[in-house]
Length: 149
Image (tube, rainbow, N blue to C red; front, side, top):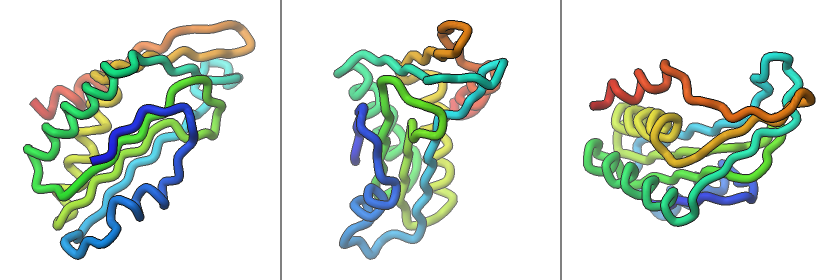
């Protein structure tokens, strides 16, 4: 299991290759890679700033990763989440799940992303030409997370 909260960019291909190295029990690899998009009202996002509590955030990600490993028959997983100031078009998050079967991998990946959107201790602030504003999570994201209960 690979869990990382970092400022540095990540390489989706390299991380996936590392997770799958020397394994012959993998039938499915599901990856999700999220990028910063300009979603501000006036489409003039300068940057998205992400904050977290070091130590606490990693423990929360480990806890939900362990839950995914128990709920689904998956071989391994990785979660990489960036923090700091990110510009539109830059990588923000990556989840990789490997399993013997695709349904297990897809379900676990979706579960992990739903958790990241609603429960993980990250805070996001949009920086635009008009100023700065903290982003609240969407009700639709909460409904998706609640569906896993």
